[in-house]
Figure 1 (cartoon, rainbow, N blue to C red):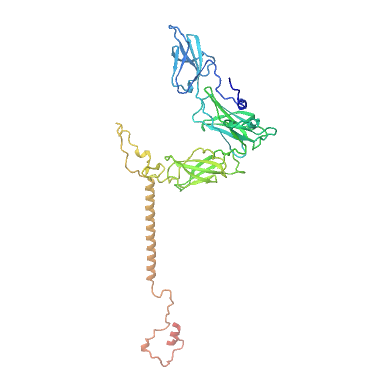
Figure 2 (cartoon, rainbow, N blue to C red; figure 1 turned 45 degrees about the vertical axis):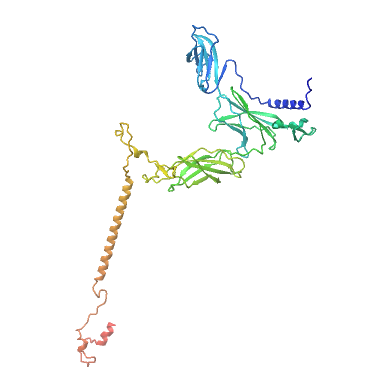
Length: 498
């Protein structure tokens, strides 16, 4: 005799029915295929059969319609003959309508769809700024098939299922905020689905090939509070399969902030600074810096190097890189985050490229504009010389033999100009010094040979010269003089000399 159902069976069945009813608003499955559609997997082989039985003396021809054909059986590209058509290594381009016929009589028309089952969505939601809408996205490992469709539903929670008055053993207790309903519990295996939802809004998601991800804009039901829980459901489907993502519970106040990447990233060389690069960028259009600021992270690398070097805690929209490699092209990217570190980092910006300043006269240097250097395994540097140094006459290598690179130095006209100018300047300076020294020597010589007494007043005696003092007594008797003559004594002469 069969035992009656236990007291716990009926509440569990009722709970499962409610969950299925709640999920009925978001069907997720492969799109329906008509009888004349054949589904093929990417990279696989497929066999198309025209008829089960065909007379042996009949020739069956296959053709595939070209794109833009108006009706089946019109213009098309001819394929192989026979009742069976084998297609190998299917591609997306092989999708189309295949027609088999005998003469002008159509036997069968089949539509081939080449599609790959979609990937299960793993959704994450964020805001681009504090005052923007909520976006939900999920990445893709491979490019989805052309017919893949992604949908998103947003539903507002109505009440917990634990308020249905279902009692059982081994359940997780929960509180019931609605009056008039008793405190109940939800079975452990059904805890992820512990609530129902209402007011679902449906919208289509878009695939971005460069970022390789689906992105959806969340349409919040009107009148939703920032602390109200919302249920986000996703589904990705095509003709091959349909997969639903796990429901995500969010609140408008709890969604993390993830800014858009910075814009207008440029890299400039600084004059006479062979190891400096200046990086400039601007805020994304979705972020208003009047209310909230961003902090940035910059990463850069020389083109031969695979690893990036990073600079954190940048609060300005520019940065000077001071350890760039001379004469080497550098790749630079920037990303942003909320100034207080809330939320997540943005995606990296587009790559910007720049090369440090190089002296235009330094063509023969190993670190010139045509050279690049990167560390080798033995911590040395490999120098790539300009390809012009290795050019040889084609006639010398016409026999296909390997030519040795030329080792003759390349003379630069700038070097000759600089050397000649320096030599002329030195000669002119030497001649000037010699001429100046000669002038100074000639002037000094003329001063040393000036006649004695030049520039002095000479006394010219008015009378006859007097005899020497040794012959003239100190005191002499006065002698009468002729009237009208001037008498000068020794004392007067001495006074005049003084």
